[in-house]
Length: 262
Image (cartoon, rainbow, N blue to C red):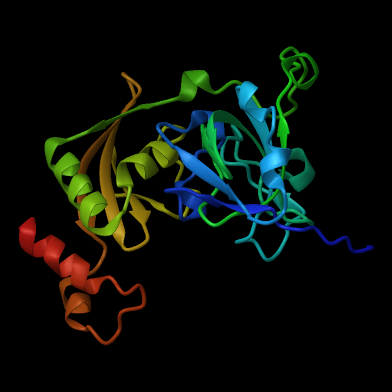
């Protein structure tokens, strides 16, 4: 292949730090406000003239956390979890690390573009921005291949009082957003054991892993609900005593958490 070099025009600031925190599509994101900060000294102030009148914009960016590509992938919303070609998916594991998202434009302040309904990670390099035009960009009645309507498969996420308290503490003390993560991971197919982050313990008792934290939940199939029962540390007691072995640099946080929520 011939090589083409692109210039980065800016970066995204977002609360989403890891790939598994982001919604499957940006439009499914709740209360996710991000900022595209364009570089200074390139006349981008002039390049933004007229953009403020558009409600949505296309953002072209780099999947900066992906180093390899995969010709076949398992899409998270495939009804029978079969592999498809990466070109038949929105997966980030592409031959070229180029991403494309249609986001809502909230406002523009100098070189800062405030957006919402975004699935773009914090620190993502931006390559280009274009306005969304409904008359030419929207084709609602076309065939969508293997992608089916999964609206009937969506589960409502409910949190117990203790899980709300623990999630709030982690958000305040470690900027860990477990409520949003639970909604992203469990709103569709919450019992899919092919996903390595999900473990089943009982008939309807499951556990979802987030790095070194564990989310306990039950599934109410009749009412299409996922009930988040508790948030616990993923470390065993003896592991927390081995302070020297602290791969994620968070054992002190877990100790504080366990002491508070005995």
